[in-house]
Length: 420
Image 1: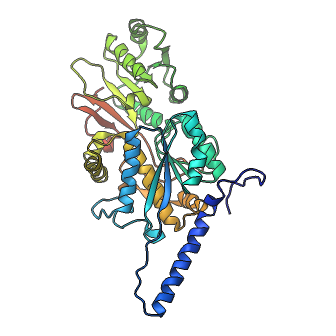
Image 2 (image 1 turned 180 degrees about the vertical axis):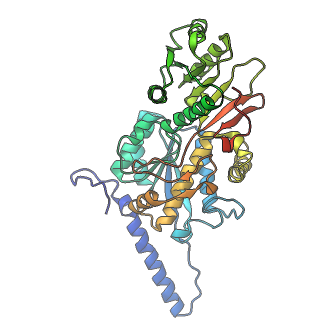
Image 3 (image 1 turned 90 degrees about the vertical axis):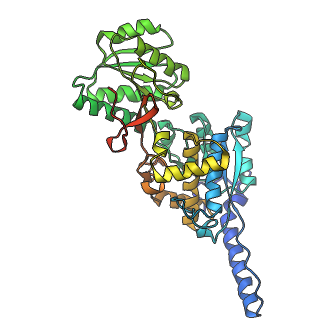
């Protein structure tokens, strides 16, 4: 019986979906009865494997990294990879469903017209769960639809805290939240305060495109007792005038940017200060920066949920990234890794439920735990709290070096010292 009811007078295109798990169980029982009857009359007919179980990826059309991450997870489930240290890799198909293969259908979310078609596509394809990758607005729209349909949704890449504040019953997020990423940045500040900078004074720059993150920075700065000597919208002032404000008192520049232009402008401000003021970058724009530091460039630190450098020294991440490169001919990105993790998590819950019924899958997601040794990202594992947030996800802080970005915090994952 589904948790979310639908009024009887409303059209019910989702009805076949809601009963798909029940129909599947009946089918398996009939198959077992036929096998038994065949055995009784001595016929050695082979048992056909169960039919495929469908999950959906809801993402903008053309996002190859996201699509490839999901496809790789499905390949891992359906093919035998005895040396791959992730769940479901060693067997063919979903062991909890008799080896049933996993099928992926991709649903476009790139426009309002495409979003309007999502419920019909999910119902027509008999999807039993959804992985979503996109902006906060896109995820909120798809999540509202899966709430109505009664389908578990795993948010793969978005970090907006507003999504877990909605109180939805079918929403889960594997990636770290905004709060987790800002917490990682301020944990580094506390560490540096004890080690090298007893009195932390902040200058906060922002581009007006990440208001939720900016509010968190203000909140945590106040809680830590760090005075903010300047807060400037970098769209409304020149780099030189902002640098003059920073020069007055600040010794740390916290930059909150939702756009690449905002992130670039913040580093230009730091380069104009009299002394080398480190930039602590927060926001998706900083996560997208690549390349190494040049001579004389300011210290740039960033809080992220994925580290390409971590891949080179973590056995799970290295094995998955190697398979990704072999399969698609390119290096794995943050979006691909996070979508792979979300898709595999949904597959683990589906197999663990032993049932294609969405309600059973949701119940398994609420109880499941994946240890860090089975996850390719620099997290402590996967386990969901009451809001659907993966409470074992988290952020790391990287520093830009001449060799590229390297982890500097937490210390147990660091490969270089903080260049402060």
